[in-house]
Length: 453
Image (cartoon, rainbow, N blue to C red; front, side):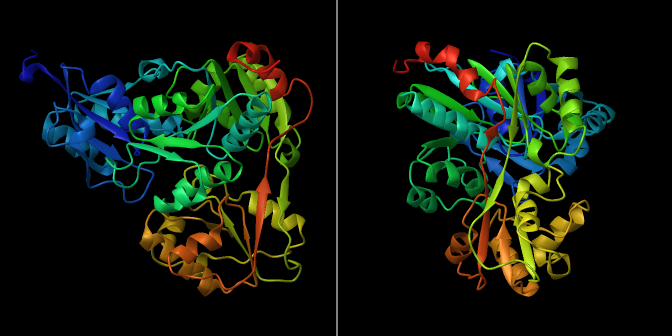
């Protein structure tokens, strides 16, 4: 038994997802390590709670505190921390080093775990879909791959990166096959943005906190598991095929963000997405970056055409655009698909919601000064959903255009509110431009995975 006084005292810096997975796969059962705390960033309201003993294991009978990342230096000093491990994603490289400097200055070493350290092995092949940045188009790529696999006669399970913002023990293993099952789980808006559309299209979504158990559950009902990554994080499972989506609207970000650059370097296939809305020179910049770090990768060129559901004209109307929250906040995008669709449908001037922002929504704008005249669909709890509804009501639009992949009216109705104005929803799916396409990419694997002849 390791002498407790010789254990390496560790803080895991995270954002309520990758951090828990790294703990479970690398740190939990290591007798030479004592995790004294997690820290939390990026997502509101996920700090000042406890990672439960039921998931932490017998070495942590009281669980592990989750504290604000702003307290990191004080935590290192207070607990004599030996090492800080960074375990979350979508950070500019310079921000990674700022966090390293905080740890080093406080007296702790700083470490990043190699992706394979936390890979879990399944007895089914895994197609992993990752990205260089949040909002690049992972989910539409995952859905396209899933559809191609289904068309080949294979059973598919979609495993989503964790978003455990509620009761962690209750959320340890989740499976959603219907929208009613999703409603019953009372998900946050961010969870809905990732789960609702694939469920609507007939996929079964698996997610949770304990990914060893999540993976077993998915593999038990599938021939192939599709990993639908979060942000620009690396996969949790050993991939048979690793696909990385690069956003042509941000081609230089592939080499500027952690761990998106890891995904770009490790990918078997790079999908250059959103070429239909990218500026001149974007494709050349994207291809140059791929050639620099991963010339062996197969490159698939793709568009992300946006269609708008029928509804009242937008010309001359007070149009409020509600966009996908994570893509706008830590994804750094000033606008999204809703704005593109609204402009294409004749909206000449978009209503600026910032003067009407209520409560926590006003705090989002204060923290993300790059945002344009769009409303991020924030809703990490009932209070924030109420603030979102209050912001829309105060702005008093004639029409709402939603670029978020959820039924916003349904979410607000479940929270006791009504939009009271017509909604036109923007939808987008991946469309490859030429060969090689994703069908070509999958073809060499299908027979070995049990596809019908």
